[in-house]
Image (cartoon, rainbow, N blue to C red):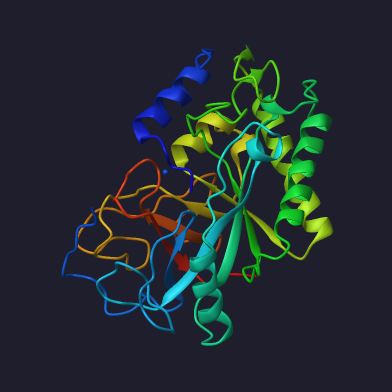
Length: 309
């Protein structure tokens, strides 16, 4: 995803906003699994293009064990771009086509999924400090997400809410921890947003998505970022929501994960909001290339297909 900044910057921003201040080369190892492990787990990529040079059925790029390419998850929309503030759209036509071919022709993986780069209440052009308006802002983003998905050939049933503190313009915190003078201004008006408003934003998005489509909402974030936005109380609790995490990530692509851990290391996926790696709601792990930990290639994901509803 939009992991342009480093983890250290993310942490600094999180601490700064919480304190009331204003303010996305591969190493190859030999110990890779012979196939996607355990049963039902596949490997994929997300966001910016990664060259897939194999013939169909396509293979996961850069992974030494040469497993089948299990899926692509792309940015279908960006709140800042939608609101006329600029911003990129991290989408690969080539990678989504390869993933779709593997899914529809060879019955491999999940095919194509999408995520929405989501805005918090603080950049809502109609912000008034109420949960009613925060919910309406979330619903408006969900409506735009569904419109933007047209023609994408989406096959995966979960739509991901990308909730993060990216450290980029126009709002370093995407409006989760601060209220801005206007949507695109980049100037902080109030360096605080109540966790209840943040959660109302998310709830509004999820309610609209489920009421107007057959898709299921899921959240992409990390333990650190999630708690810095939603705290540790009821607003942060999402034990029944599908999750995609980028913690703990690594700059290494190989060996690829077995289950939710990198073989021969202590690096394992960590989820958030009451979901653990043993939960049926733990669906994806961006094991390399995310969270500001560059690998020089792109974002690589492990995907559990066992619990997709």
